[in-house]
Every structure is written in structure tokens, then in C-alpha cells.
Image (cartoon, rainbow, N blue to C red; front, side, top):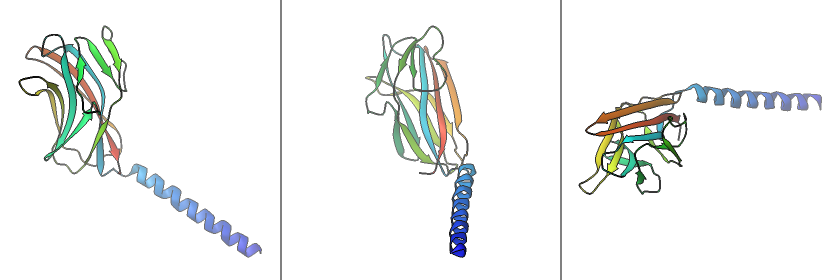
Length: 166
């Protein structure tokens, strides 16, 4: 009886040790994929008068995925609107608009990934900020703040890349 209990206890300890070691190793290993998520957008100056209709896409090869808004609609923003999903608080002097965001997952294979803040208008969609990345496997979240103050408009755009295994 004592031998059977000892074998069961040792077997359980080995199994638990294997699971814990595997989980820890998996958490430290660079992930083969990255997830793009929006954190915030601040509209200091608009491209059009009154309101801009904005959205965020991520594109790799010929695959385009909408990151924000995830419901497929554009979001109308006015001057000094701060669209806040997560991360740092909105800057002083801006109107906070808390919203939910989607995400897009891509392979971290070192090939070009474009993340873009877009403005939808009658003449066609305009790229407000376009960020080229060449993601490789990562094990920690990366934050990407970008700002454009050109051609009469001024936007600040922050997104993150998160490691993911799915």
C-alpha cells in the first residue's frame, strides 16, 4: 500500500512539474504571432471641417483587417476628441470618448505589416498615419505611439503589439 501511494505521489509531482515547467517555458518563448490593438487616438486638428470619420486597419500581404471600430462602422470625431480604449489617460484639454476596440492577429514572420489610421471621405479613404513594421516573434508587449501634424491635420495614434500563440 505504501509503495502504491509513493508511486502515485511521485507520478503526480512529476506531472505537475512538467506542466509548470512547460507553462513557464511557453511564457518566456517568443510568440509566433502578434496581435494589433488600438489604445488611443487624439484628433487635435481635423482633415475636414466639422468631423472626420476614422478607422484603423492592419494589412499584411493582401490581407486587410479592421482593428477599430470592430463593428465595421467608422467613428466620427471632432477637434480635440480623444478616443480612449486603454493605456494612458487622455491629454488635458481633450474630450475623452471611451470606446471598445477590436484587434487583428498576424504571423510574426519578419514580413511587412502596415498599421494605418484612416479617414473616410467622399473622395476616397485617406491615410492619416501609416506605420510600417516588420514584426518578428516577441515575448513582451510593444507600444507604438505615432503623431502626424501635416497637411492641415494633427493626430496622435497609439497602438500595441502583443505576443500571441493562437
